[in-house]
Length: 103
Image (tube, rainbow, N blue to C red; front, side):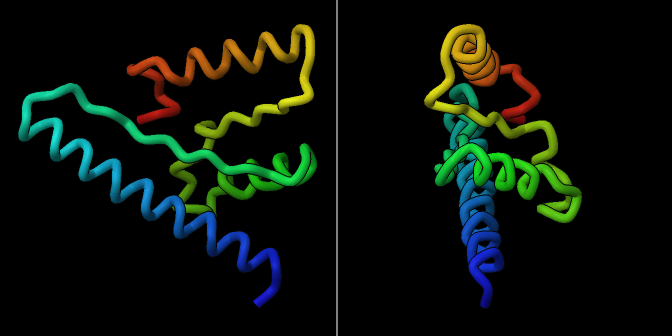
């Protein structure tokens, strides 16, 4: 198996666990009359080039039928100035309970 295939397999395993966890959290919330908590997935990349490739893979139509298109945020820890502000703003918007990216 190629390194790319192994990487995709790992991502797919992580997403399957994410989706299972999401169902379990929603079930618990409904049964206990609590607010729904939506889980998230954190993927660490080697560098920004790798991060862009991972984002493209996760958002592709062939990856979980395109369900994660426009639901990925790429954060560059070396960003500064306006770019850093955009990263912070993106994370704040993403964490909002009604955000589509977290649906």
